[in-house]
Length: 363
Ligand code: ADP
Ligand code: MG
Image (spheres, rainbow, N blue to C red):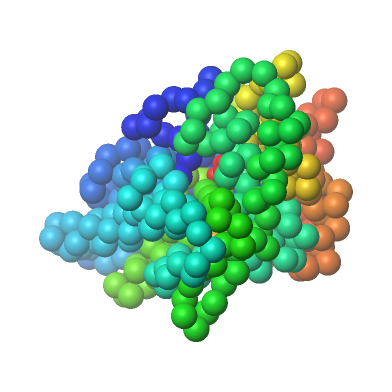
């Protein structure tokens, strides 16, 4: 969904990030491989399943009774299939995806979609409404214009008239949803959708559902920096994850949090940004202006029961920033953590819900 090693490097910007590092170890790109990390005899063991999806990597750690090699392979395949299914439906890089077909449908006639695509559009629309359009899945043409999408552009500042022309068909309210017929209808034939800011979180939720269906109750899933944890480990410990400093080079842990039956997603401007006429811009578009957010050296982490919800909110709050964003998150009971570069070090602020959710498990 974002650029990856197997895709052409379209701009000189910094490649994909993995903001949240599970403290137990970084994911390594080994497809369909299960690693047994801990445990012996008949006691519980932790298996790690890693691979690639959506132009990024994933890591799934499962604590369970010892599994046969056959069962490990079966779980590895279930995880990969769930991720491939989401990518196959929601990728803007894959011209054969369901989303690409919707985007190529230059018409205002209703377009039928699968349950999962409909679900993600419905969630995106709900969060667009609450955030006053800060979250907007129709910003794709602007993402491309500024050189952050599948279509390459580089060089100087885009012309204001081009931005204005594109904005005629950009807007989350330009796609109408019909739940009965499960269709999406464009109000402007050129409107397109980009699910990059929500699909990784959705994929995390899907993998979690599959693992629960397999009888697994203790696991930590990470896809491109978005995580979901379930259960308490045999040792009595909760899963612990690190929020890193919003610094391109440092990769230092800024804060660790413990999660139990919750997801955490992070959006930041420090791993994916580009320069235009001497100004640094992030890959997140402010739909109110049609321009990318200026680079601030910042991140927003959101904790929620749903990784898709956390993912979308993290992007929206990055658009809104630590003042307006914090006010909205506080009012809506969203658990959010804002970190912004200051003259020395970083300023950080949390909402009440974030403080509540991380009580006793922070450091
Ligand atoms: P990442 O995908 O890098 O983890 P995000 O979840 O914040 O980070 O998603 C950023 C991507 O979402 C951008 O690369 C772009 O494709 C898309 N996007 C940019 N601005 C917005 C916005 N205001 N609302 C929704 N999606 C956006
Ligand atoms: Mg997001």
